[in-house]
Amino acid sequence: MLLSFLFIVGSSNAVNLPHGLDGLAIMPTFMVFFAFGIGSYLTGNSNFSEYLGIPYIEGVGEVIVICAAIVGAGLGFLWFNTYPAQVFMGDVGALALGASLGIIAVVVRQEIVLFIMGGVFVMETISVILQVISYKLTGRRIFRMAPVHHHFELKGWPEPRVIVRFWIITVILVLIGLASLKIR
Image 1 (cartoon, rainbow, N blue to C red):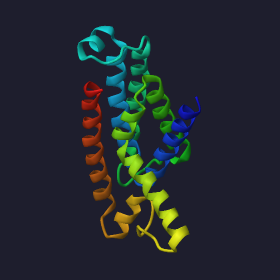
Image 2: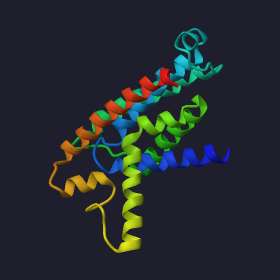
Image 3: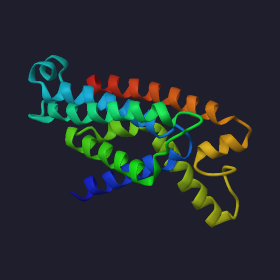
């Protein structure tokens, strides 16, 4: 119970970190929810789970409804949140989406897969943790600015380049996460 609580809170805060750039939080979140929708349907369907050799969890296939709703809302939001953004997510949206991701990962019993597919969120979180620890212990910074997406901006990358490259990383990580469904 405690581990699930910590996982959900951590997931919530991890999604909150990259929402400072236009479209950087919603697109990876959208892709991970899409993948979790597929995974929850396969896990909740006895025929598919038996065929794929994955554990069957009764009733978890219904999670696809939540995932599909968030994917649809995310696409609508992304239309207005891409660079230059007209609408902003804010902490309330980012924290809620992150908590939802954490809850769905716990329900579907795919917490480790969320670490894989949500690698951008993990990378952003680790960059902040390392920056704080380094500054507290040595007085020096590892990155020019944390989270790491700001580091790349300060190195001269334009905002759209940072965003699209993080999207590409997310696509690769989501495909790895979906492929790992059969491995487990």
